[in-house]
Length: 101
Image (cartoon, rainbow, N blue to C red; front, top):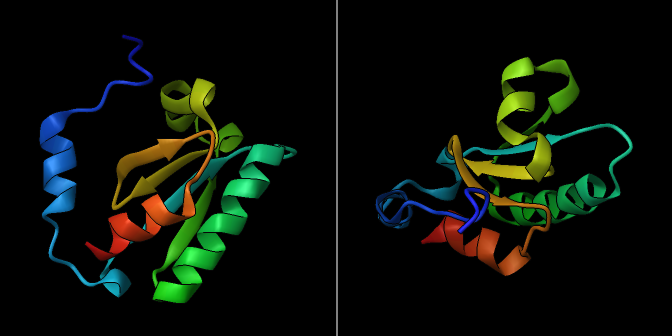
């Protein structure tokens, strides 16, 4: 299986067991300029985070060599509390669930 699609079971379980309230979470969108998938991801993040009062930020992959090396083939990438949540397409219900359960 491609490393792009591997998920660590322990990481998934730890994220699911996170007791923090939504407003204590942080969603990060890693994107690049001119990326239509990034624009789509941002729209979903703005909606979900706005509904739940979750802070979010965006980072430009072209301005950070570390992010570029780690995520170039996956953008847009969404992190929840610094851990990769998804890439390419953001599912609204999955993001909402990750932030509330």
